Length: 336
Image 1 (cartoon, rainbow, N blue to C red):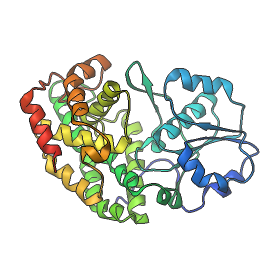
Image 2: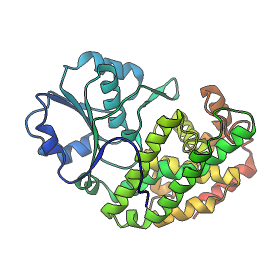
Image 3: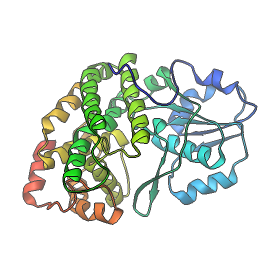
């Protein structure tokens, strides 16, 4: 077990929002409909405002900054979009921030920058440090089990990202190799393989272990000044998918799909990722994810051009030829 995880102050428990909401003279909530329906009744008193997060474009976020009344605290409740929106408000206004993730689908509650959707891609900006991240097991239990299991994506991504980083360094691209971070990416994968069955059974300890991985990864990204050990071509595939289709699916599931696709094209032991996905009970079939083969194919075909246009880190995607052979290899890799 990852016993020495570093990162933001984190509390694990049940019924955490009620006591938290009594600590402030005024507070605003950034959330999404499903988690708010679950935990909203726990709130003591009335929030000054409640924002439903659904848009991470800079123009929209800045409109929120300008239009919302000042409060003593901002509480983010929900998935990655809620976490990132709350982070932006905190950063721009320097209002104390508390985060209650509703899913382990993304590590946004443990990272300092907001993942903006801008000019057809994703860019990171801001510097948010919450007073505390509160992981409420009841809130996680209220979510569909498959969405909780999908939380492995941003740890599983170490498998392909480390490969891409090593390739980039060998090709003369920054940032330089860091032996400790590279070694830790393997530790995260080992921890993920070990906790996956606990996550499949919805055990609290599995959720805690996964969130501790996210917490340490978030800290390490800031400490290094980059996320090369956990973000590579699998994330870039996800961004390409969003740009091409104009939609998204749950972040963790989309990234895990990217890991399966890109580890195949890397020639990088895709069976390792597949075994972890299987042990976790995570959805992986395209039909179950609501993704068509046509969407995968189109996302892959534009990926080499997309990474260049967006100025993304060098990876196996740069200059890759996506022909009939590559597409057939990916199709077979996804058919299990």
